[in-house]
Length: 225
Ligand SMILES: [Fe+2]
Ligand SMILES: [Fe+2]
Image (cartoon, rainbow, N blue to C red; front, top):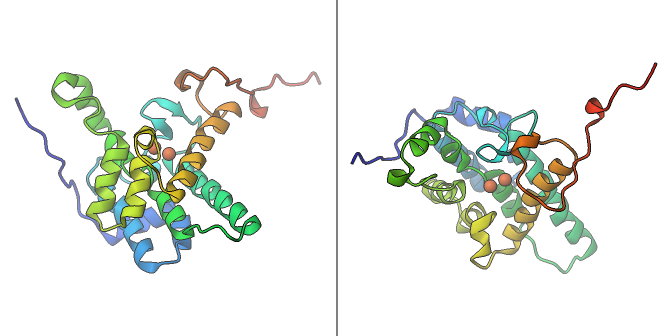
């Protein structure tokens, strides 16, 4: 049977890094310059190992074909989770000054939590896995697992790799850090609230017994004139 290897498909250039900064402008708010550079590098590395040109080319889903936004791209989700996570951190820091939160880890972790989607969402990989799941697994690696590899490969700290690893199902099997708990809730809130607000494509909604979807303002019947 043919074996498969994850290979770099194009050079990691300054133009690619620049596209990462353009798609995720909140990266500029990471205070630690080395952490900021490695967060950019994680996305450039992951993109260079995929068939996606830039982050905004990745479809806006929670998983491939599931909880997909009606418009926008994966960058909208990443930026939304980053802002929600910081809002959670800043709320507690402002009202409970005795708490200790590493704001840079929250921000870098939120912006990189789905870096593995370059691999899991890659249509080339999706087609290969669908062709013979018995040989490859389907997916071979979830984005959490591939994202953990990417974070460690570019030299991001374990604290950020942990958030890529444990923000989703995998985090139900290990103890999660404080910063990971914040990003997990921001991530899950993003999809749950987007679903309730009617921002997700109905056929892609993850089964959810308590969800009742509100129509968008643009979907209401026009009032009689
Ligand atoms: Fe995720
Ligand atoms: Fe996410």
